[in-house]
Length: 582
Image (tube, rainbow, N blue to C red; front, top):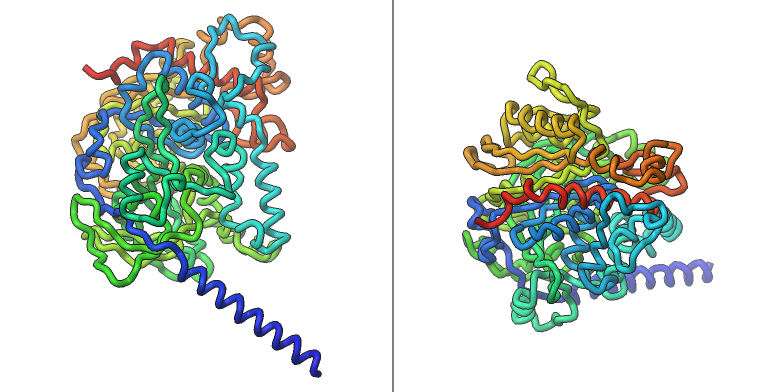
C-alpha cells in the first residue's frame, strides 16, 4: 500500500511539473510588435502597392512533381527570352509553389541562377546519355527523390512516439522541407528562420523587436547577375476551425496567400456549412486581411485595440508562436492536396479513428489564426486547418485578378490531354477528362465544389478552348492568347469590367518539338508504358514509375520535361512579348 501511494505521489508530482513547464513555456514566449492590414478594396490598397510592381504576373499551376518540373523549364525559358524584368508577380500553387519558393528564396545549393535553372539544349542535341546527367545545383535534382519514403518515415515516428518526435499536422510540411527545400538552404529544423522581403523590411522588424536578430530571417534571393525576383504569392486554402471538422464542403472557402510581406486572405467571408459527424450547422469567419509572416500563428495580447487603421499598416502586440512560421510552411500547406478529401469524408474519418486512433484531418497543417472582419476588427484566434490551394483554384489566377494585374501568363501544368473538336455549351459542358478541370470553372462551368470561381463568361471559355485545341491540332506548342473582361465575383471580391490579357500555356504533347529529337529518344517516348517516359509529358501525380517509386521522377524524365517546357517558351518569344513594358 505504501509503495502504491509512493507511485501515486510521484505520478502526481510529475503531472504538476509538466503543467508548470507548459505554463512557463507559454508565458516565456517572445512578445513582439507585428504589422497587420485590413482587407484591400482596390489593388492600390494591397501592402505591396508601394513597391510599384509592373501589372503583370506569371502563374505556375499545381500538379505535384510534374508541375514543379514544368515550372523549372518555364522559368529558364522566361530567362532565355529576357522577360523576368517585366514580371511583377509570381502566383503559384502546390507543385508550382515548390519551384517558386526555391526560386524566390534559395540561400544555398546553387551558386547562381545559371546553376539553379539548368541548361537548355536544342531538341536535336538531346540524347539518352545526356538525359541521364544531373548538373550540379540544378533544382530538378530534388524531383528524383521519393517524397513518399520521407512521409512514411515521419508517419511511423508519429505513431510510435505518439507525436513526441513528430507532430501529426507537421508530417507533410516536414517531408516537403527535407525532400525539396533543405538542399537549397531553406529548411533546417534545428535552426528555423522567418522570411521577409529584403534588408529594409527585415531591419524595420528588428527596430520594432529588439529580441529578434538579423540571423532569424531569410530574404528574397538577390545576387548580382541573377534574375530580379517578382513578388511571390503562394496560394493555399483555409479548410476551417479544428473544432468543426469534418465538414461537408471544405472547398466552399477562399484562397489564403503567403508573400514576403504578409500572410492572410484579402476577402472576408462568413462561411455556413454542416459538420458531418453530428450534422449540426456551423458558421465561421475566414479572411479579411493580412499580418507579417513572422507574426502568423501568434497570440494577440489582450490589452490593446483590435481595430485596424484602414489602408495603413497597424502595429499589434503579440506573443510569437512557439514554432516559427517558415517558407516551408507556406509551400508545404499550398501542396497538401489530401486536405479537401480527408476533411469532408466521414468514412475516412471514422475508419482512421478505428484503425489508427486518430482522425485523418489531424494530418492537415494547423495554425493559430485570427480572421479580420470587413470593418477591420481582429477577431478571436482559433486553431484552423489549411490545405492545398488547388482545392479551390489550381492556377493562382484569381489571386492576381484581385490585385488588378493586367497581363498574365498562366502555365497549366496538367496531366489531362485536351480533347479536340469539342463544342462546349450550356447543354454540353466540358468534362474533366477532356481538358484540365480547373480551367472551365473560371468561366462558369461548375466542377465539383468549385462553385464560386467564375470570373469570365462561358463564351470566353469557347474562345480559350478553340485556341488551345487549334494549337494541338497543328502540332505546335499548345498556347493561346486572349483578352478577357471580368464578370463580378462577390465571393472573391473581384469587380466586373476589368480587362486582362492572358496567355494560356498548356502542358501537352508537341509533335513540332518531338519530331526534332534524335531517333533513340523519340523511340523511347513512342514506346509509352514500355519505355523510359511512360506518360510523357503528362506524368502522373503519383506512381509514375511504379508503387515503390512513389512521388518521384527519374533523372531522364525530369530532364526531358524540363527541355520541352523551356522550349515551349523560348521558341515562342513573340507570343510572350505582350508582357514587356511599352
